[in-house]
Length: 450
View 1 (cartoon, one colour):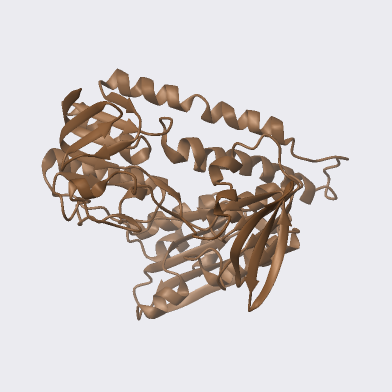
View 2 (tube, rainbow, N blue to C red):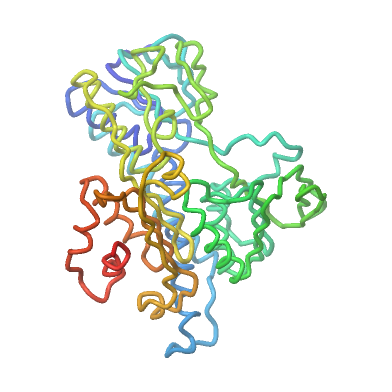
């Protein structure tokens, strides 16, 4: 059976849903396809459920830190099954709600694997969907590591669905997933190891603050091994054995669960893009400045499926809006990636926006570095966080903020003010002169730029 639409959207996350709804509101006939439950990674398998777990871990940790300072309790622990039940109150309703929103808007939903059969035709099961345009917003998946025993790796999706937390967990790779889940698991009582292949985990964040977070994580009982490349994973009885090359030495580690945290790639290799003449690379569909395929002008891409901006949910939503406007108005709109903050939701959180110091120096900028250990500041002392700090890069003469990097209480919120200043091209003096509510974490900003 064949059906025709003005637009076919592949993916029901932030990018795909945004494009579909905006084009439908403009009167286009729209089909949307997903091989997984409707809702996308963030709402079902990523940021939203993760933040539920992080919030519980943060609350328990806060109480533990203050046990000798007026809060008395004999037993603070995370009840993992109960926490999972709470998490499911956020995730379980999403697919049905998203499906209902599509149908209410007049968007035709299709569940199944999409595969291109020509430049603008997509096959889903026994249906062939013909479109004037196709938008690829299929998200990302864990990168293939190409090691023996890779099939034993649990994904972040698996971790977020655990009914019971295993006592020993190894995280392969030192990115967001590993650090965030490690901080949750450690505070829930698991023995945690992170195996990072290179010298620095959390690439893209300020190295000085990453080192401080690593030290803090180790002080909280987590083992973090650098220069540790996983060679193979074996299943031996009820446990897993991870074979590692560590600075020329072979080592083995045992665990009850081994989690993939070694990066993600665009989930596009099963779309049969060659049939549509769509060029692609490891990062995603190769697009021009309008998020249009460089090789097939009828196809656009957005979010993690596009080789464009940083792989963040707000970026996906923004790119979905850009694609919709270009489809409806012609190619006139381009995404702006300046001043987009990013956060690692550890305890405390690590946040950054703009250039790191090494990147700024590599680009030849002339700037001042404002940095300090803030563990003695009021905002850290009142919650007993001992590993906190900041680094802000201010361009000489203009005082333009080139980058801001925070590790500490409410860094995930405070970074948004730096991002706003950067996107609105406000100089540091504007932040310095602002009158902040006090005492708040944001009130520290004036000292960070002085």
